[in-house]
Length: 142
Image (cartoon, rainbow, N blue to C red; front, side, top):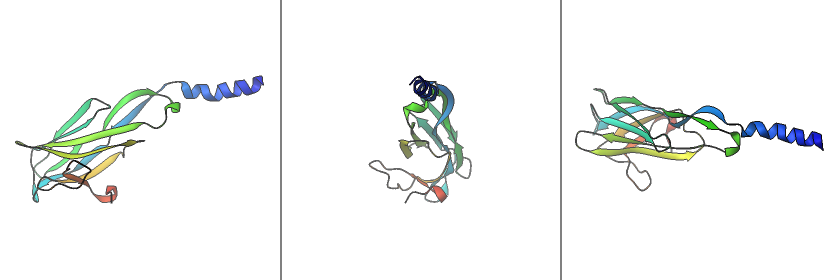
């Protein structure tokens, strides 16, 4: 019986010890911003996550291209707490208007990289709120 107790304690105690690790709450997002096919220069993209209380901000180049993120923090975690949660959103701000780019949330880990195309002249179906960005390439969701 004592051997069984030592075995159980020996296997479960390490799972309760907090281990520092880097958790990603938003991927590296890259893509283009256009309006009716014309690249939008100097549009600000704000990538944020309520879990990190951080916002990464970049501007598009002369061709409307951008690369922002990832959002990550160091946390103490244990393996007994289950899968982590992630949530992030991308907001596009031009000189006069704000556009909701996209937002995602889930259980587990976000994808490490996300490629998107944003057209400020038309929104794409995205739940109850309109979004102006869509996944492209292998990340496309049917």
